[in-house]
Length: 206
Ligand SMILES: N[C@@H](CCC(=O)N[C@@H](CS)C(=O)NCC(=O)O)C(=O)O
Image (cartoon, rainbow, N blue to C red):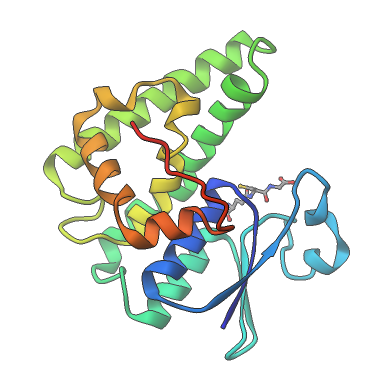
């Protein structure tokens, strides 16, 4: 059994999707980020930067924070979605260090705080658009991000692209990215992991 400490965000959904993909039992512990649960001293003991997601593996009491590290841990434990480690690690790290942080800033300036900083809005819109283009180019020559097989790199990237309705970049205009997105959004585990609170939350259509 895996204890999952999470919230309804792209980084959180990466892990519920992975847990569904590998068929592990898990118990959801909701961290209410609006109420500041992440700053609770008990939570900080398992999450040094006060961020979700975190897991605790009840089988061995291991605690893992950072979504990329959690995906690697679960992939190694289950033996799934991490076959070609070198290439998968590159695409996973690109998501962790670039795609997620930039789209996260785009959410801040364009979605949550629009009108507050023209510079911020333009800067992150421009870089986010180039991320769509770069992912689209990759998916023209590769079925999945890291090659022919679905991997933890796709699982890490998918929930960020699932916020395309906030991005206003036009997912439909990026045919290969759209093809990848639609295919992944039809996977049973992805549908279930996306709606990990069982509230009927649907994956946004392109
Ligand atoms: N690099 C971290 C980022 C985690 C992260 O930024 N989590 C956000 C939600 S998506 C969070 O916990 N925010 C709470 C806060 O900043 O107070 C990871 O991928 O796990």
